[in-house]
Length: 408
Image 1: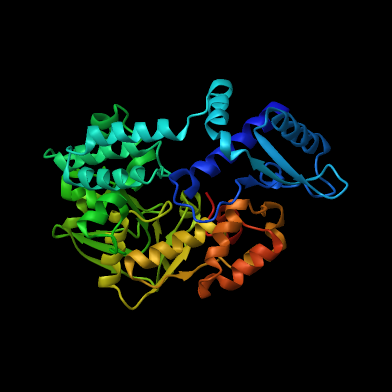
Image 2: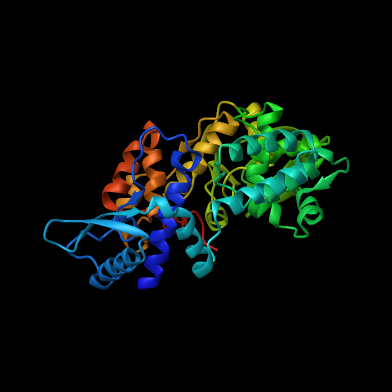
């Protein structure tokens, strides 16, 4: 454990130094490079802190002091650390020690890696050239981009996409670029699309799904399925299709969306549902129910907008998990469709219902962070405050079951 803390202490101090103006010689005030012990262990100064961890940190600092790599400041008449300082004057020696003992990658190595990437991609495409210029400006200032591990993969995709002339699905493009059908979607798609949008002037297209920008370069998502049920009639290619007779609805390819002429909703409400189980359970006679499955994709958006165009006077509702994800899905749905969806059974009433008490979960740190952002949106403020105050969230499947829309 002591060696683990020795490595952490030196890495944090060295990286802090290399990211400071001292490394570029542009500093005006010569402040010492330091870290606080609570950066290593957040309960370092608390009475209920782990004694073994605190002792290991103290011993690691003592060992590094003996090597001359750090100095330390302590509380009066105590062994409790206040700050740990790097011996800036021997930064190169300390860095070499980290390299030899712990396989640390120094800043100069990272800069050389970026130089190699620039050399490979600066002439690969217009966007690659522009991004390589930005990289060059960064390393000229000895600044390392935060996404250094992803840079080459991102530029590789952009170079291919800008030069692509063949009509491809995203997973086919991923195979060509990376030799892996899912790598693009799982690793680099978001960053690639964001960069392309920056240069294509499409950053502010709120109603456009992230990867739609790729269609300009002949790269498309695989056709999605549309799942819907209830009392509605679709006029498609001159033929009327009545969905009311299908208990669990119908599913059709999004490729057929362009053939739909009109959509007639014969009930007061159209409701989107986040999860499949809840969708199957929902069978209210006064609602048409649409399976969303998470954030709406472009095909779902287009179908919903068509529904609204043909049926502007009915009610629009959304039913999802009562958690940060569920509310962000609702927020996104309203934004990309331009439709005001009312929340259905996503309130304090459900969270406080004794019937659901055994199914309520505590919030994670990530939940709390996302909910705090949501709390600034008036529509969610009250329920989010309740969730944060009571440390609760709830999945919709238990709600749809207890509402008992219909039995299996």
